[in-house]
Image (tube, rainbow, N blue to C red; front, side, top):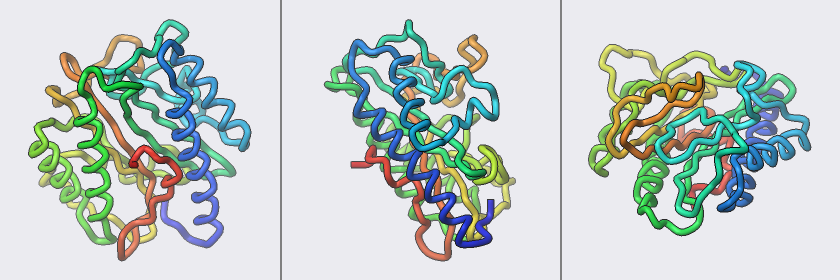
Length: 253
Protein backbone atom coordinates (compact mmCIF):
# COMPACT_ATOMS: atom_id res chain seq x y z
CA UNK A 1 0.00 0.00 0.00
CA UNK A 2 1.11 3.54 -0.68
CA UNK A 3 -0.32 6.17 1.65
CA UNK A 4 -2.34 8.67 -0.36
CA UNK A 5 -3.88 10.83 2.34
CA UNK A 6 -3.99 11.75 6.02
CA UNK A 7 -6.99 9.41 6.26
CA UNK A 8 -4.81 6.50 5.10
CA UNK A 9 -2.18 7.28 7.73
CA UNK A 10 -4.76 7.55 10.51
CA UNK A 11 -6.40 4.28 9.42
CA UNK A 12 -3.06 2.47 9.46
CA UNK A 13 -2.15 3.99 12.83
CA UNK A 14 -5.43 2.83 14.37
CA UNK A 15 -5.22 -0.81 13.31
CA UNK A 16 -1.49 -0.94 14.02
CA UNK A 17 -1.99 0.31 17.56
CA UNK A 18 -4.64 -2.38 18.10
CA UNK A 19 -2.42 -5.12 16.69
CA UNK A 20 0.63 -3.93 18.65
CA UNK A 21 -1.18 -3.65 21.98
CA UNK A 22 -2.84 -7.05 21.44
CA UNK A 23 0.55 -8.66 20.94
CA UNK A 24 1.96 -6.98 24.05
CA UNK A 25 -1.00 -7.96 26.24
CA UNK A 26 -0.98 -11.55 24.97
CA UNK A 27 2.68 -11.83 25.87
CA UNK A 28 1.93 -10.58 29.38
CA UNK A 29 -1.06 -12.92 29.70
CA UNK A 30 0.83 -16.08 28.71
CA UNK A 31 1.64 -18.39 31.64
CA UNK A 32 2.99 -21.93 32.05
CA UNK A 33 0.10 -24.41 32.19
CA UNK A 34 -2.07 -22.35 29.83
CA UNK A 35 -3.10 -23.80 26.47
CA UNK A 36 -2.30 -21.94 23.28
CA UNK A 37 -6.05 -21.97 22.58
CA UNK A 38 -6.75 -20.05 25.78
CA UNK A 39 -4.06 -17.53 24.83
CA UNK A 40 -5.57 -17.19 21.35
CA UNK A 41 -9.06 -16.65 22.79
CA UNK A 42 -7.67 -13.82 24.87
CA UNK A 43 -6.26 -12.32 21.68
CA UNK A 44 -9.68 -12.70 20.04
CA UNK A 45 -11.28 -10.85 22.94
CA UNK A 46 -8.80 -7.98 22.66
CA UNK A 47 -9.29 -7.60 18.90
CA UNK A 48 -13.08 -7.76 19.13
CA UNK A 49 -13.10 -5.05 21.81
CA UNK A 50 -11.85 -2.69 19.11
CA UNK A 51 -13.98 -4.08 16.27
CA UNK A 52 -10.90 -5.54 14.54
CA UNK A 53 -11.02 -8.80 12.57
CA UNK A 54 -8.37 -11.51 12.40
CA UNK A 55 -6.42 -11.18 9.15
CA UNK A 56 -5.45 -14.87 8.80
CA UNK A 57 -9.07 -15.89 9.37
CA UNK A 58 -10.32 -13.40 6.80
CA UNK A 59 -7.67 -14.16 4.19
CA UNK A 60 -6.94 -17.86 4.59
CA UNK A 61 -9.63 -19.23 6.94
CA UNK A 62 -6.89 -19.96 9.45
CA UNK A 63 -8.19 -22.00 12.43
CA UNK A 64 -7.32 -19.38 15.03
CA UNK A 65 -7.46 -15.64 15.65
CA UNK A 66 -3.69 -15.41 15.99
CA UNK A 67 -0.74 -17.66 15.15
CA UNK A 68 1.05 -19.13 18.17
CA UNK A 69 4.20 -21.15 17.47
CA UNK A 70 6.43 -22.94 19.99
CA UNK A 71 10.13 -23.84 20.05
CA UNK A 72 10.98 -25.41 16.66
CA UNK A 73 7.87 -23.93 15.01
CA UNK A 74 8.78 -20.91 12.89
CA UNK A 75 5.29 -19.61 12.17
CA UNK A 76 1.58 -20.31 11.59
CA UNK A 77 1.20 -22.47 14.70
CA UNK A 78 -2.45 -23.45 15.25
CA UNK A 79 -3.90 -22.58 18.68
CA UNK A 80 -4.92 -25.80 20.42
CA UNK A 81 -6.35 -26.93 23.76
CA UNK A 82 -3.75 -29.72 23.66
CA UNK A 83 -0.72 -27.43 23.33
CA UNK A 84 0.20 -26.50 26.89
CA UNK A 85 2.74 -23.76 27.54
CA UNK A 86 5.72 -24.74 29.68
CA UNK A 87 8.31 -22.82 31.65
CA UNK A 88 11.17 -21.85 29.35
CA UNK A 89 9.23 -22.38 26.11
CA UNK A 90 10.22 -20.28 23.12
CA UNK A 91 6.89 -18.70 22.18
CA UNK A 92 6.06 -16.77 19.03
CA UNK A 93 2.83 -14.80 18.70
CA UNK A 94 1.89 -13.26 15.36
CA UNK A 95 -1.07 -10.87 15.38
CA UNK A 96 -2.47 -9.45 12.15
CA UNK A 97 -5.85 -7.80 11.80
CA UNK A 98 -8.15 -5.55 9.76
CA UNK A 99 -10.17 -2.50 10.75
CA UNK A 100 -12.13 -0.24 8.37
CA UNK A 101 -10.33 -1.63 5.35
CA UNK A 102 -6.80 -1.22 6.77
CA UNK A 103 -4.55 -4.14 7.69
CA UNK A 104 -1.51 -4.43 9.97
CA UNK A 105 0.85 -7.20 11.11
CA UNK A 106 3.04 -7.56 14.20
CA UNK A 107 4.91 -10.54 15.61
CA UNK A 108 7.40 -11.40 18.28
CA UNK A 109 9.11 -14.31 20.01
CA UNK A 110 9.91 -14.44 23.72
CA UNK A 111 10.96 -16.88 26.42
CA UNK A 112 8.12 -17.86 28.74
CA UNK A 113 9.20 -17.43 32.34
CA UNK A 114 12.74 -18.47 33.26
CA UNK A 115 15.20 -18.99 30.44
CA UNK A 116 16.02 -22.57 31.42
CA UNK A 117 16.91 -23.58 27.85
CA UNK A 118 19.07 -20.53 27.05
CA UNK A 119 16.90 -19.16 24.25
CA UNK A 120 17.30 -15.50 25.21
CA UNK A 121 20.35 -14.88 23.01
CA UNK A 122 18.45 -16.02 19.92
CA UNK A 123 15.46 -13.83 20.80
CA UNK A 124 17.62 -10.79 21.45
CA UNK A 125 19.55 -11.26 18.21
CA UNK A 126 16.33 -11.33 16.21
CA UNK A 127 15.01 -8.17 17.89
CA UNK A 128 18.30 -6.34 17.47
CA UNK A 129 18.66 -7.30 13.81
CA UNK A 130 15.09 -6.26 13.02
CA UNK A 131 15.65 -2.88 14.66
CA UNK A 132 18.87 -2.37 12.68
CA UNK A 133 17.24 -3.42 9.40
CA UNK A 134 14.33 -1.02 9.93
CA UNK A 135 16.70 1.83 10.75
CA UNK A 136 18.38 1.40 7.33
CA UNK A 137 15.19 1.47 5.26
CA UNK A 138 14.56 4.58 3.16
CA UNK A 139 12.78 5.32 -0.07
CA UNK A 140 15.12 4.17 -2.85
CA UNK A 141 17.00 1.52 -0.83
CA UNK A 142 17.09 -1.87 -2.53
CA UNK A 143 15.16 -4.66 -0.84
CA UNK A 144 18.14 -6.93 -1.44
CA UNK A 145 20.40 -4.72 0.67
CA UNK A 146 18.13 -5.10 3.69
CA UNK A 147 18.20 -8.85 3.10
CA UNK A 148 21.99 -8.71 3.02
CA UNK A 149 22.07 -6.80 6.31
CA UNK A 150 19.76 -9.29 8.06
CA UNK A 151 21.70 -12.32 6.79
CA UNK A 152 25.09 -10.83 7.66
CA UNK A 153 24.03 -9.84 11.16
CA UNK A 154 22.47 -13.24 11.78
CA UNK A 155 25.60 -15.06 10.65
CA UNK A 156 27.83 -12.88 12.81
CA UNK A 157 25.59 -13.69 15.78
CA UNK A 158 25.94 -17.43 15.13
CA UNK A 159 22.50 -18.03 13.62
CA UNK A 160 20.92 -18.74 10.25
CA UNK A 161 18.07 -17.01 8.46
CA UNK A 162 15.05 -18.92 7.19
CA UNK A 163 15.20 -18.44 3.44
CA UNK A 164 11.70 -19.46 2.39
CA UNK A 165 9.86 -16.95 4.58
CA UNK A 166 9.81 -13.19 4.12
CA UNK A 167 8.36 -9.82 4.95
CA UNK A 168 5.81 -8.24 2.64
CA UNK A 169 3.81 -5.22 1.62
CA UNK A 170 0.59 -4.61 3.56
CA UNK A 171 -2.17 -2.04 4.02
CA UNK A 172 -5.31 -2.79 2.02
CA UNK A 173 -4.73 -6.54 2.20
CA UNK A 174 -2.63 -8.79 4.41
CA UNK A 175 -0.09 -9.46 1.64
CA UNK A 176 0.64 -6.90 -1.05
CA UNK A 177 3.56 -5.93 -3.28
CA UNK A 178 6.39 -6.35 -2.64
CA UNK A 179 5.39 -9.92 -1.76
CA UNK A 180 8.89 -10.98 -0.66
CA UNK A 181 11.20 -8.88 1.50
CA UNK A 182 13.76 -11.62 2.05
CA UNK A 183 16.03 -12.19 5.03
CA UNK A 184 19.03 -12.82 2.75
CA UNK A 185 20.74 -11.21 -0.23
CA UNK A 186 19.19 -11.93 -3.62
CA UNK A 187 21.27 -10.24 -6.32
CA UNK A 188 18.49 -10.70 -8.89
CA UNK A 189 16.05 -8.58 -6.90
CA UNK A 190 16.39 -4.98 -8.10
CA UNK A 191 13.23 -3.68 -6.40
CA UNK A 192 13.54 -0.66 -4.15
CA UNK A 193 11.52 0.58 -1.20
CA UNK A 194 9.14 3.36 -2.20
CA UNK A 195 8.49 6.46 -0.12
CA UNK A 196 5.04 6.39 1.54
CA UNK A 197 4.72 2.60 1.07
CA UNK A 198 3.63 0.38 3.98
CA UNK A 199 5.54 -2.85 4.55
CA UNK A 200 5.85 -5.55 7.20
CA UNK A 201 9.53 -6.21 7.89
CA UNK A 202 10.36 -9.59 9.46
CA UNK A 203 13.37 -11.45 10.78
CA UNK A 204 13.23 -15.26 10.75
CA UNK A 205 16.22 -16.72 12.61
CA UNK A 206 17.13 -20.30 13.49
CA UNK A 207 19.84 -22.10 15.41
CA UNK A 208 20.55 -24.59 12.57
CA UNK A 209 17.90 -24.69 9.83
CA UNK A 210 17.91 -22.56 6.68
CA UNK A 211 14.45 -23.58 5.47
CA UNK A 212 11.08 -24.01 7.15
CA UNK A 213 9.21 -27.25 6.45
CA UNK A 214 5.57 -28.25 6.65
CA UNK A 215 4.79 -29.85 9.99
CA UNK A 216 2.01 -31.88 8.39
CA UNK A 217 -1.06 -30.06 9.70
CA UNK A 218 -1.44 -27.87 6.62
CA UNK A 219 -0.42 -24.68 8.41
CA UNK A 220 2.52 -24.89 10.81
CA UNK A 221 6.06 -24.47 9.47
CA UNK A 222 8.94 -25.84 11.51
CA UNK A 223 12.73 -25.61 11.57
CA UNK A 224 13.73 -29.25 11.95
CA UNK A 225 16.27 -30.01 14.69
CA UNK A 226 16.41 -26.30 15.47
CA UNK A 227 14.88 -23.54 17.51
CA UNK A 228 13.43 -20.59 15.64
CA UNK A 229 12.23 -17.04 16.27
CA UNK A 230 10.41 -14.31 14.35
CA UNK A 231 9.99 -10.60 14.93
CA UNK A 232 7.96 -8.23 12.80
CA UNK A 233 6.88 -4.61 12.57
CA UNK A 234 4.62 -2.79 10.13
CA UNK A 235 6.28 0.43 9.00
CA UNK A 236 5.82 3.40 6.68
CA UNK A 237 8.82 4.09 4.43
CA UNK A 238 9.98 7.72 4.34
CA UNK A 239 13.05 9.70 3.21
CA UNK A 240 14.34 9.39 6.76
CA UNK A 241 13.92 6.65 9.36
CA UNK A 242 10.64 4.76 8.87
CA UNK A 243 7.56 5.29 10.99
CA UNK A 244 7.05 2.14 13.07
CA UNK A 245 3.28 1.82 13.13
CA UNK A 246 3.18 -1.18 15.48
CA UNK A 247 5.42 0.39 18.11
CA UNK A 248 2.69 -0.13 20.75
CA UNK A 249 4.16 -3.55 21.42
CA UNK A 250 6.93 -3.67 24.01
CA UNK A 251 8.75 -6.85 22.99
CA UNK A 252 11.77 -4.66 22.21
CA UNK A 253 12.51 -3.56 25.78
